[in-house]
Amino acid sequence: KAGVTQTPRYLIKTRGQQVTLSCSPISGHRSVSWYQQTPGQGLQFLFEYFSETQRNKGNFPGRFSGRQFSNSRSEMNVSTLELGDSALYLCASSPYGQGSQYFGPGTRLTVT
Amino acid sequence: DQQVKQNSPSLSVQEGRISILNCDYTNSMFDYFLWYKKYPAEGPTFLISISSIKDKNEDGRFTVFLNKSAKHLSLHIVPSQPGDSAVYFCAASATSGTYKYIFGTGTRLKVLA
Image (cartoon, rainbow over all chains, first blue to last red; front, side, top):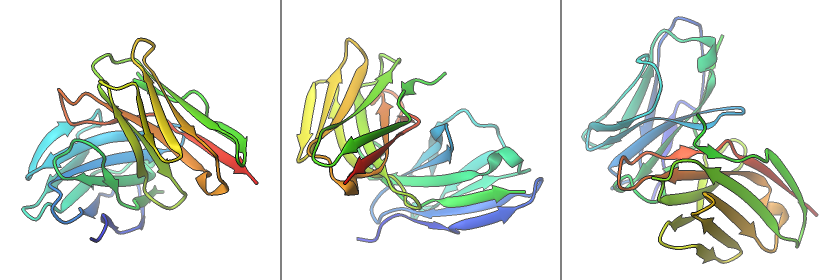
């Protein structure tokens, strides 16, 4: 079974721009969660989608948004990028959201 | 407010000895805990989990202990191997509530050959 894939793996953007990251979960997994990882902060939960609905949301500003498609693939969008948005963005999938999650390799976003 | 804390940013252990990684939490609603291992340039990989109805769970060289009264869990790796060198994250969730995982900041384990 193929693992969680994320595209692109690396991205460089300028302040003020917007960006869209993509995540394809493991086949059959309906829950996709997104995390931001920065040095010293660990993994910060962004949001979780299940069956195309946002089920949970972390404490991030409205510039961070996401969606999930009928095939469970998910996208995350960040608008009006700030320097502090530079981070590794990880998505994780699981069958229903409980139990262990399977992470993708992440997208390294650099905002200059 | 860091609800899940890993107070040791790094740990060095000799090969063959025991590695003990610690994690503290503040939210008494947490009832499911997981440990992940992360190598550079890869996503975290699931290691072991424990539900609050247990106080110990074992899987090969990895054992997780949960002390609910102290709101503390620990991961024991015995014997430690150089391939165990990675960053370890603990995570917690309240399964009765939202399906949302709160992660600690990680502990970098270095196993010395």
